[in-house]
Length: 125
Image 1 (cartoon, helix red, strand yellow):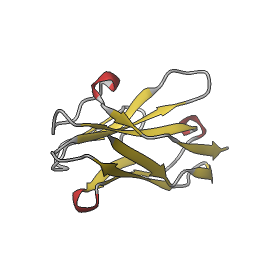
Image 2: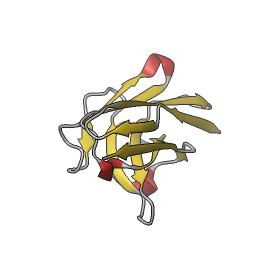
Image 3: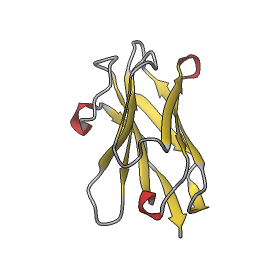
């Protein structure tokens, strides 16, 4: 089993920044890709960003390009999501996920094997 714990969410004014962290533990013995997704009230969960094992390949949703940056620290099994210039429409529960079957990321939700419990991000106008 793999456990993922997100942290760093909170309430911030529009234009502000937050940094989310996702710490992985458990039976991780291979390289893995990681991703961030979010779910706003009344909406389906959507892709936000993803990163390869090496960190050299990253994908972003169009809605966050230029504002969000995904990164990782493999020595500590931690993935980050730096969120700048936050907007009220970024309000959602943010989830991290890992894909143990590949080192290259995907935007496909179903490809991810393990998920965190989520962390709330609220952006006020």
